[in-house]
Image (cartoon, rainbow, N blue to C red; front, side, top):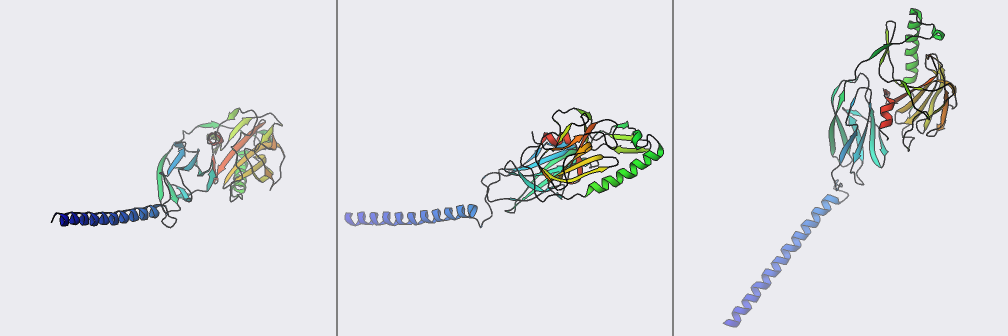
Amino acid sequence: MELYSTRAVFASVFLLLSYTLKVMRRVIAVHFLLIATVFSPGAGAYASGAVSITVFPASIIQGEPMLITVESLDVPVSVKSITFGGVPLRVFTYRARPAALVGMDLNKKPGVYEISVLLSDGRTIKTETTVGERKKIEAPFGIPKKLGGNTQASQDALISTLAAENKNLANLRTGAKTFWKENFVEPLKEIFVTDTYGYVRTTGPYSITHKGVDFRAEEGTPVLSVNRGVVRVARTYRNYGKTVVVDHGLGLMSFYMHLSKIKVNVGELVGVGQVVGLSGQTGYAGKPHLHLSVHIGGVSINPLKFFELFK
């Protein structure tokens, strides 16, 4: 009787161990299946960390640029699109991260705007930023004698010819990729601002917004391309004088105006810091200087704020 009881106990233990092993195998199999679901190529979920959006600067005002980058993105997940306020932006790679530039028009409505990033695995990452109002500043600005002086006829001619020149410069061809890889540099070896961006010049009954920055530059000072790009314009305008426009790709362009001499040709690929012309006072200018404008997707933004993005 005692022997029978011992055998029964051993049998019961054996059955219990067998059952336990079966359960453990099932648990391991399920656990492995879950791991495969999270990381297998067919599942669409690859990120091991939380993907985030970095916005620099955190908030801006009308007329300023912003750099948006996507952080903590693991291969093979990619960015399908980036939008600002519902408007698609052009995406490029900056410091090994997906990025986009956006410029705030001087007439952009102040307020809170949503930034949305659509990932290749179907996820959407969102954040918000604030666009503030720029303080409006006005100052009188005369017309040089070479353009007729301060007469009503000269003022009318200035406005009509400016409109024609702006139209000519509005729809320039841009590259489908970024031509630049290095950081942006300033257009002169020595920088001294003589006229700021965004204020309104009053000329008779007309108001003309200064959509660029003027730098002090004696006649004949070498003017440098702020980065690598393709020359889209190298010609003389009535008001902008001798002008060079460099396309840096994806709608980013730099404008160099009132030059005394142009040193490049249309279609030429120029390097960062390459001389594109010599400073002067051609066109609507009273003394030698360099006028620099920067456009992002056709929107003129403060060049000084643009340089800050890449420091």
